[in-house]
Image 1 (cartoon, rainbow, N blue to C red):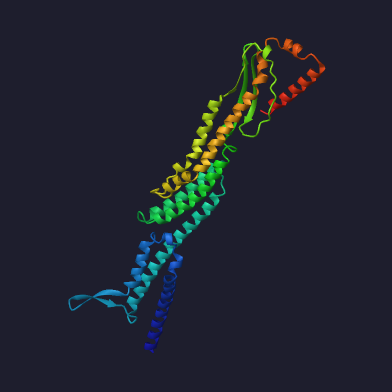
Image 2 (cartoon, rainbow, N blue to C red):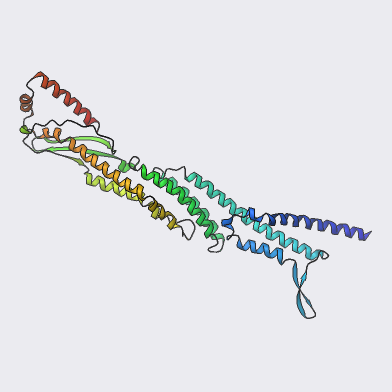
Length: 348
């Protein structure tokens, strides 16, 4: 009979509507667990549209007696029921699609920050910067897709997370700065020069690595009565030039917190990174103290050779040897001293 066929067709139609509504209801009831708290402002438009589809989609305007009034949708009107379910499904699909995209971006940034923590900021600054720029590109892409200001809370969250990783890498870099300085300063080829009119100029050239390890005390053998010319021991480049280059490179690293403008297009998180420098004040003080100690020790190295370099000013070295080494014991003692001094020179 036609009535039974019509009832079966209506039942099948309503069954499809019911399945769709059940899926939508499950999504709505678990929405709070699907949407991240920091991303709720970003999804505001989609959330409002979904809520509007749920609440207002069941009513429509109808004119009766010259007046418009709200008419509640009923299951007895299949056409309107179908339109309502379709609108609701579209709104839920839009919200779900945007939420999935945002969650994907969120967890992608999280994994990149974990990778960022593996880079040494001092030794691999370019790699660190490249990873940060990838995070920056992701946040900017999300920010441009939505109205201005909607992503502020989410971006601020990631600024704080990046700042934590940066602070750890920055403090570690400061603590190891003197041991792992950039190649153009950490290893410098110094010329230790001995100058004097009588002996001319003698140059001891060694590739010297700047470090503050303890220097062995060396005995100074002077023959003051036999030296006729003043001898000066100095470095080339000078310690002043070396100190200037060292501090120039040091400043580049120390000033890194001020170079960060923050994530996102607007870049309002700069203050989070500047705070890192203030937190590292104690470490910075220690770094500058270690640097000064380093140059003090380097100056002491030159001073330790002033006694030996004084022989460069002797007019007649053979006469000094004949006058000073008069016994076999003196000869043995001085010969051993010369061998020890040669080893010290090779340690430069």
